[in-house]
Amino acid sequence: GENVEQHPSTLSVQEGDSAVIKCTYSDSASNYFPWYKQELGKRPQLIIDIRSNVGEKKDQRIAVTLNKTAKHFSLHITETQPEDSAVYFCAAHNAGNMLTFGGGTRLMVKP
Amino acid sequence: GAGVSQSPSNKVTEKGKDVELRCDPISGHTALYWYRQSLGQGLEFLIYFQGNSAPDKSGLPSDRFSAERTGGSVSTLTIQRTQQEDSAVYLCASSLVGTTDTQYFGPGTRLTVL
Image (cartoon, rainbow over all chains, first blue to last red; front, side, top):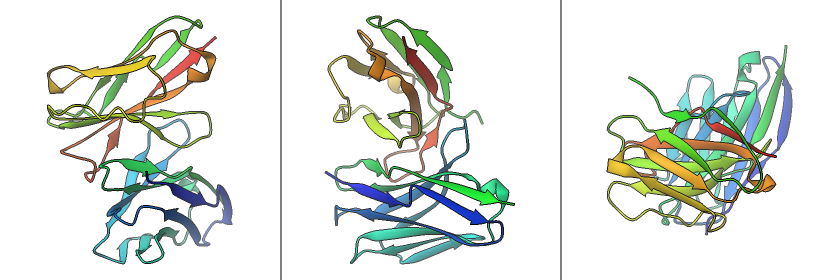
């Protein structure tokens, strides 16, 4: 089955800096890659997603890139703010019709 | 409109007892998912319902776990003979049609097995 690895597990940045979280997946048939943000004590919420027919997608300060050849995708957050502090999960959807989640990255933005 | 709701929000039980966790998906969503999240860990897939199709139970960790979805809406996750390692937050999510649609999560049920 699909295996999704996410790095780093924790990331601390200064407010205003950029943050990058990387994920790799194992199933070359995977075609949909969402990113979820989970604030402390709250439910995960989708922040951005990308499908396998594009290489990059941006939404304001957030961007996701996908390299299908290398089977990895990344989340980029620019001009980080304290409210960006949360746990971020990547996921990959594969032909098995299932979303497999990465282990999560705890992002801390220091003011 | 209303989002995904779950009940109870917290459940404390004794080892060996059975528990039932409930999920109300967003109205009109045909796909429903159950996940387990242990403290500080990622999301572990448990089971997936899509319309009237047979559920994908491939993530259920043991035969003590079962789930049903009545009338294509409300779902109940049942854990029999609970063990301490079952302690976790159980999250339900729904999506419009399938697994490539945005999944909307409920607030979760925090289960503690003493």
